[in-house]
Amino acid sequence: MSEADRRIESVRRWMTKARTDLALASIVLQRGPDMDPWAACFHAQQTVEKAMKAILISRGLEPPFTHNLVALAAVLPGDIELGASLSELAELSAAARGTRYVTDPTGDEDPTWEEAEAAVAVAERTNAAIRVILGEPR
Image (tube, helix red, strand yellow):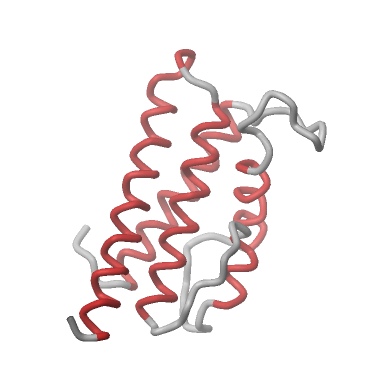
């Protein structure tokens, strides 16, 4: 397999995982009281992280090992429009961090349903923008 083919396959795999995370975040919102809003926030953040890493790979860049969306945005090529502001990316990173466990060392409360809905909306917008950048069908 050529280097270009490996890169295309890697981008495809990252975007498949991003779409799966987005679907899971949406399912959490749909299920409402049967679920917890932190799960929607976590999967929304994962959607954006994986899609951003797909862009980097598509441009021949090695994605850094980080979950911080603002840090990832900082290494994206300048012509990339994500459809989300840096403050939205920072909020999404914060909403997904530390809430998966009962004992959150930061003392932060779990996200609310309203915060989860906002997180999923950012993930949907960002994922759609990245799919356009990558030339994926809608």
